[in-house]
Length: 117
Length: 113
Image (cartoon, rainbow over all chains, first blue to last red; front, side, top):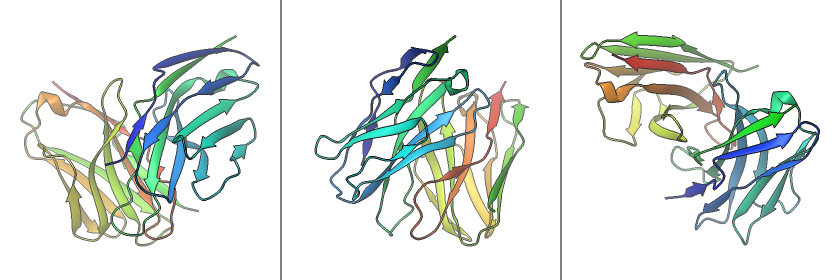
């Protein structure tokens, strides 16, 4: 089974600064998707960014960008110009691109990000 | 646009009582549906998934069951709750084929006392 590892249980960043959250994963598949989800205090899971494994270009969404290293099986999230509203739990997730089965997401254990005013 | 509704938001139930959490999806057809549980300080654990009406797969042996009586309705149940069933439960859906991400409901915080 695929595994996703987030080695940083907690991170903090000064408002307006940049922070990078780490994620590694293990898979034998060549085609898959990777995601970063944000879970604010409301507990609802919100998709932050998505990366298709077949794309070499790193995904970006406004202040959020990823560093996808397929050979190293690494998928880090960079948050630029951090804002107070970025404070949340961040989960890295993996999903197979196979069209068989349930294609459920495999999640890491999360990183709690604190933004310091 | 697609929306997912999950209720109730919070629930306090005594040990041994039954449970029914409901999730419905609007604006899409034939979705994959999922129930996840999130324990404190941990990631999300997949409990059940469904690829069609009446088709339920269980990932983790437990005191819970799931049903999908309609295409866009997914129900999580228990006949007798245990203390260990306490947690945060999330329903999610994804496009059946060719979909990428999953979309989550707002979650239910279940406390068994």
